[in-house]
Length: 99
Image 1 (tube, rainbow, N blue to C red):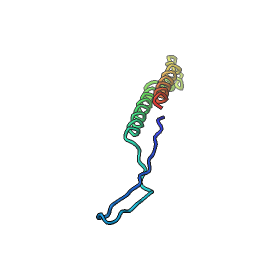
Image 2: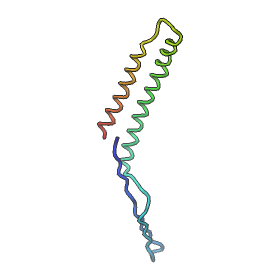
Image 3: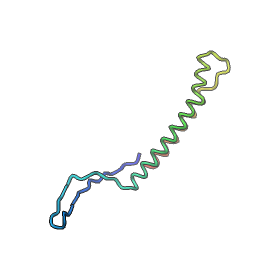
Image 4: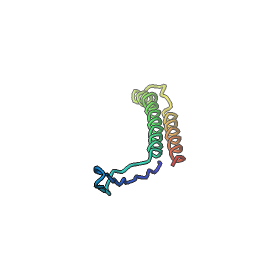
């Protein structure tokens, strides 16, 4: 995951040109580029989770239901689990290469 540096903003405000107030405890901010990188990583991970959810809803639930109901033509649940592992590995490898 990308590391983001937080900057503490020091506020110096002029009040009508006659007096300047100083606040050393202003808000924390991050650079737009760092924010954009984190947002892109978040979207990629959400996409991977959506693909995993599709595998679970579209394949694994059906296979488990077939096993529970003792159907003879049970789908290969291990193949679906391997698909999920591939999705996770690809997402984590992409994240690690960006960090």
